Length: 180
Image (cartoon, rainbow, N blue to C red; front, side):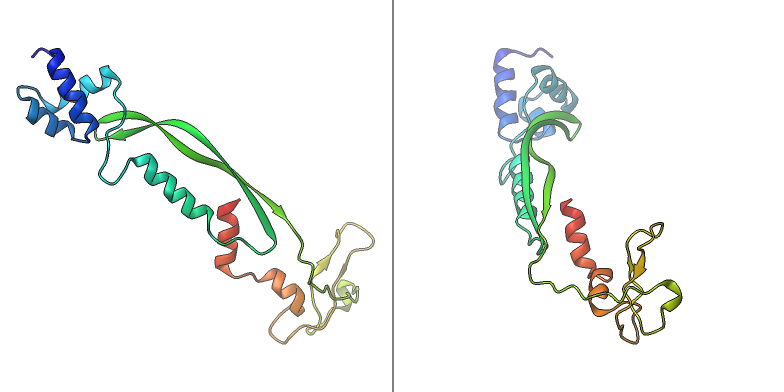
C-alpha cells in the first residue's frame, strides 16, 4: 500500500479530528490500524483531539481545582506552575504534549497571634503524676530539659493546649501533607 499525498492529508485531517487509528484505517480503506499508527509516528503528529477538550485542558482544570482547596489556617502558600513536555500513550501510540505541572508548593508558616501558651511548671520525670502534662520541652541531653507539668484531663497524658498539638484531625494532616 502506498501513502499518496492525498491519503496522508486525509490521515492528518482525521487524526486531528480525534478519530482512532481503527476508524481512520476503515475510512482510508486498504490499510491496517497498525499502518496508520506507524504513519502517525513517522509524521510526528501531535496528540488527537478528544471530545470535550484536550487531555491537557482536562489536567489543567483538575490541577486548578486542587490548588483552590482550603488551606491550613497558619500556612500561606505560593504555587509555582511551569509547562513541561511529556510523552503519553494514546492507544498504541506515544504522543508528546505540553502540560502545566506544579513541581512544588512553597508553604510559609505564620504563627497564630491569638494563641495563649500555658506557663509550664517545669517538672522533672520523677515529679510527673497521672494528672500532670507529660509534654517534653527542650533537648533531653541538655540541663534545662523538663516536662510541661500543667494539669491534664483524666483521659489524656497532655494538658488541653498540648493535646491540641498532639492530636490533630486526620483530614487536616492529609490536607497539609498533600500540599507539601
